[in-house]
Image 1 (cartoon, rainbow, N blue to C red):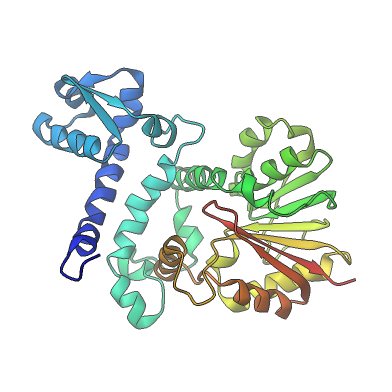
Image 2 (cartoon, rainbow, N blue to C red; image 1 turned 120 degrees about the vertical axis):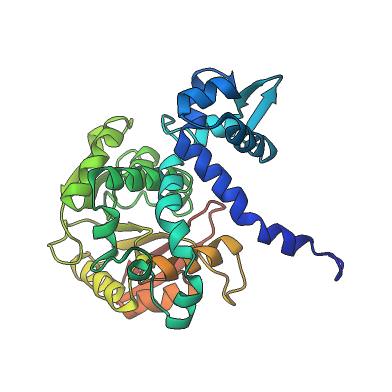
Length: 338
């Protein structure tokens, strides 16, 4: 790029406008409604309770972003919108978009204070005290929205995470904090003799049931309620933690990993699904942005392969391997020494 080309700066100045345009269209139900039948702006405005002129600007903005197509006076979903932006889609990211709009978007407004103080922004943004996930789950609807959003995100990576290492030697996997069970489902569908237990809080793990039942491996999938910080862990040869380590402080994660290490048999393993930073921290951008997201929303952060190695070895593990998957999440496997 030429030094006098402001393109990258202008693009970043407007980046939040693009996100908010998509967020708003999802929140209004535009993509679910247009999936039923394409229509013109006046009809859609009546059904959604919006002003026709203002809605036309939003819809035309979605056309510009490649989310809608306009044919004559009618608006149509693109294929990407049908798959990822409808709440009724089995691969929907709408839940995570709604969570991003309602929770992350306000939190990010205080990134400057998070950087100054090094702490998350829940109290500053919402006036909330206590545990982060208590607030995410403060109503059944907010819990469902968050979990379905994370399920949609998980589907983008879980098959690749269980593919990059050969996990066939582990007959039983426990997916700690497994929520809707997408990682356990992917593992059991890939490895025909593996059994898996989705382990999470009672109010969370109930949401896994429909997803497990829909899997071809449903006979080898089960759920168990519990708190992995406090309760006795189910026994298994492999424990999986998908987007868990990056949520919590170093002290809490070391304590959990040591608990896992203590109950594993020799040769057992722990599989982490996380976004890996480059060793020098300068990429990839998706992991860098997620690490900033962890700063404003949690106690945790993203890590480099070497930082994961140090964390796992500090908990007693050896043979730590990291693999890039090409998906949003990468994979780390560590083994308890013989």
